[in-house]
Amino acid sequence: MPRPFKPRRVSEMPRYTYFKPTGIPMPLLDEIVLTVDEVEAIRLKDLEGLEQHDCAARMNIAQSTLQRILVSARQKISQALIEGKALRIHGGTYSIENEQGCPRCRRRRMYAGSVDAIDCPECED
Image (cartoon, rainbow, N blue to C red; front, side, top):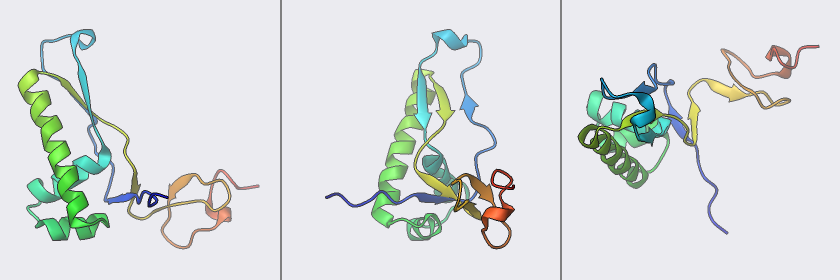
C-alpha cells in the first residue's frame, strides 16, 4: 500500500493567480497550471533565498521532495515564458499555516486559538 500523501505547508495563498502574455486574446492561449505548493517552493528558494533544507523544513516536506517540486515549477515557468503560454496558479495538496479544518463540517478556516465547532460560522446553531 502506498504511503499517504502529506500536504505541503504554505504560508499564504498567492495574491495573483493568473499571468498571460500581453496582446494575445485568452481563447488563443494555451494554459500551464502551477500548483500553490510549487509557488511556495519558488518563493522560499528564489525570492527569500533560503537553503533547500530550510525551505523543506518550512514546508514540512523532505528535501528531495522540495527538489522535485522546484524542478517541476521551474520547468513550467520556463515553458510559459518561452512558448508564450498563460500561467495559472491553482490546486495542489497543501495546507495553509494557522488554518485548520472544523472537526464537525471539515470546512477550512483561520483560527486564532483553539479549534471548536462552536467557533465555525457554518456549524453555529
